[in-house]
Amino acid sequence: MKIESLRIGMKVRHPQYGSGQVKAISEAVAEIQFDDGVKRTVAPEASGLESMELLANINGLELPLKQLVAETLAAALKQRALEKSHAVVEQLGLRWNGGRLVLHPADAALQTKEVPLEVFFHKIVMVRNNLRVLEQKINAHEKLSDGEKVEMQQYITKSYGSLTTFNVLFKEKEDQF
Image (cartoon, rainbow, N blue to C red; front, side, top):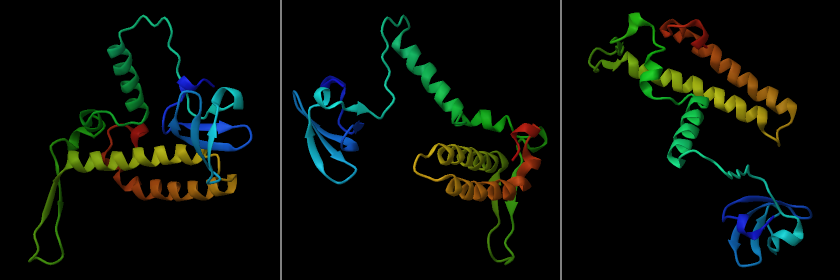
């Protein structure tokens, strides 16, 4: 790996010392804090240092950078299901549009709480989306054993089960928990 490819904070792997993070860079060497707690000075090209991060090399791209960034960001947001809130509200069943969630405390002396149903629905959808992301991260985690992954998946499944009460709010069955 060339010294020019390194950045401060970048995750790297050394064939002898394992993984670490770049802390400083000079003309020919980099100072790396390895996972074993030792900070070492390494010549990246001579040592066989490799990036642990995904890298992109875009040569000959004939697309405006602004368009590339916008399309990449839109795809990332869509994948993470963090689209604009109006897209979330579109998943709300039509009979609930403009509705309100009203919570009445048992003590009549206390104030009633009202929340627009769209706001409540948005929060429910965000919980669902965050559970999906958590599920993906658990499945992709390299240090968890299969048994640990299954155990954590059971908690996510239980959480989905608890949220099925709110399925009545969704317009489409495939959006439900």
